[in-house]
Length: 433
Image (cartoon, rainbow, N blue to C red):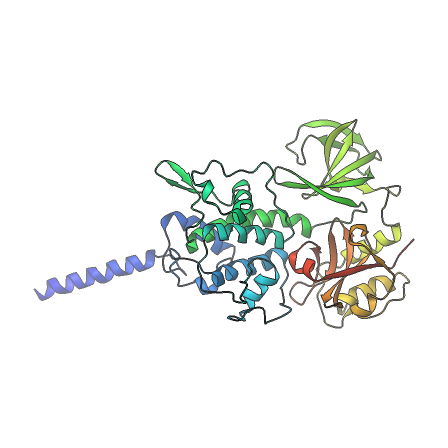
């Protein structure tokens, strides 16, 4: 009898060990359908440390959503966000929540509270995903979007309808099958694993979009700001002329190499630009028809209307050459590193311009420029209550180059990123000729 008890004890130990070893590392529990998404999130280093021992089948809180979204956004932007204030809410001063609020990802309540432990409904999460995209300058829209295929579409609150349509259109939300019907369940509380799965889809789409922002080139053509969508590509209306800088260039029916070839352009052919695409392509007028060409094969035309002068474009390109250099507080040289105003000081003084040393003093130089009239080479300023504590050099198409912070160094950002849009103070033009 004693040997039999020992046998059963050993069997129990082996079975327990097998169960423990089969559990996912770093997560107490999740459903089988979520396994592939979990492993992908893990490979991308997107799972917050605080989630390590959580039951992911349980409801996600507002604070946890911030922990998931903010580090991911900083990863995409390659930029560490620093909150301007710590007194936004009466019930929390958590830095990640403060960052999420300044980025516009999640807001507080009218009574000044944030309610960090409150669960998120699915429709609240839809809005968080859209805000997450907007914080990184992607502006998703509801054109050709619909939630009519969902049996409970009428249950979506009016304030969440647009966000729900966007999430469905871009594939972030697929819905759930119930009794032969596809449901959104907009007012149901969201589980952590459901939130993480949808967030992963959004992150991958946004990361692909932002690749083109981070690899922007100076294009001295101004846009009107009117935006349309072709698939997942944003097209901003633009006017100007550029030249072909390759022997032959295919004109296609869509802004990608999958579009059919409408014709060819030869080197030095003048091209009439009508739109700038978020993936780096241009929309053009081709023999009275609409066509698309890859932007890397076009050169700026000196005769284009309302464009920056060659000196300003040259300075913007020189500043771009320092992307990747380290940030050093007080630095103003390639060998010693740059801070934000140090980069501006170095590039402009190397070209014979007398510049003040700090951002707030640089904002007193040159002539003021309206946001809608920005040209490559203009200085853009950011700060709080009229004081400029940050400066960058505009490079066109809504982007600027700047010495960001010790983590990111010199990099390209978009003016429309929520963090910079909220702190934008104005612009000055140093080079007027």
